[in-house]
Image (cartoon, rainbow, N blue to C red; front, side, top):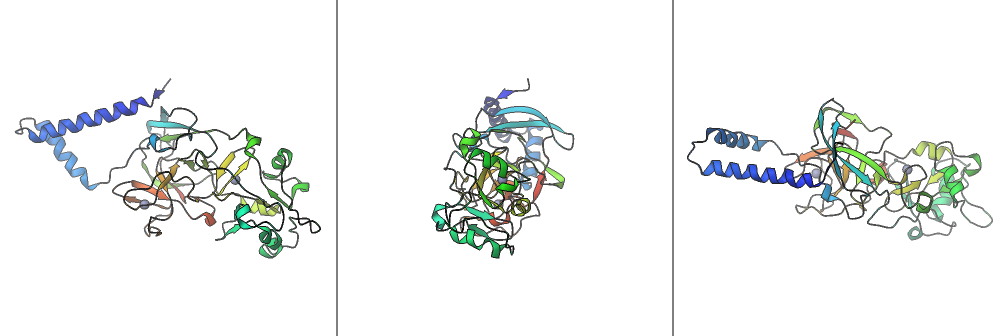
Length: 334
Ligand SMILES: [Zn+2]
Ligand SMILES: [Zn+2]
């Protein structure tokens, strides 16, 4: 009922162009039209404040979104009414293959497997060495992820096992497994819908990241909250990520737990890090490092800062931190 198709965007832009035309007309007039002159003065006094860009529905990779983006009326968490975009992601990356995840045996090399991170500041390749070293790494002799006779790794290689292990309360017989699920178990991906304010607005105070997705990537994947590593490790499981820091479970499908550079569609022309997605509050999330390999030094607690081109925006954390942003700086749609 509130739906207007994306074409309203063009109308929006046309109106903007018309207004610009009016301003120009005002400048060339002899000052007879005081109303327009006033507007010109107002607009020049606004030049000191950064203009916050709207969410750009054209920033997404082809094949990332399942349906056309629609504009809907929405209420933000401070009670204000505004317009939001409704994005429906495919739920599988449109720009890269999924996997690989677990090693077949303890002889597997790093290029055959995915990665693991637990938020403690390191990214591990889940190669044979890693599997053998688990009792030492986590200082617990109960870790035994492989058959000592054959060297084969315990992998959740059926839908049933994936179902029993890629969840809280891992079934007892699936402890000591490297957990992986196939995209085939979730029909190629689980689509999710996100309602995001078109014009992001900074909130008076930040909102903490809950258990819901943090946002969506430009290649059609859920940007998930931190992986529950304590529960995963507590069940003597490794919920393997692929090299893009994503993995699959039967409920959420394929989702990212880290920004590994796999969803950065287009480089920024000024050397800034590339955009990788949008947070639920409508502010863009960019890669951690700029094109010179440096991290911004002025990020706030949510990992955001402001510049003249992008307005307020976030920079993703490193993969080993098991997170993207620290909190939401903007108002969220209810
Ligand atoms: Zn996960
Ligand atoms: Zn930046």
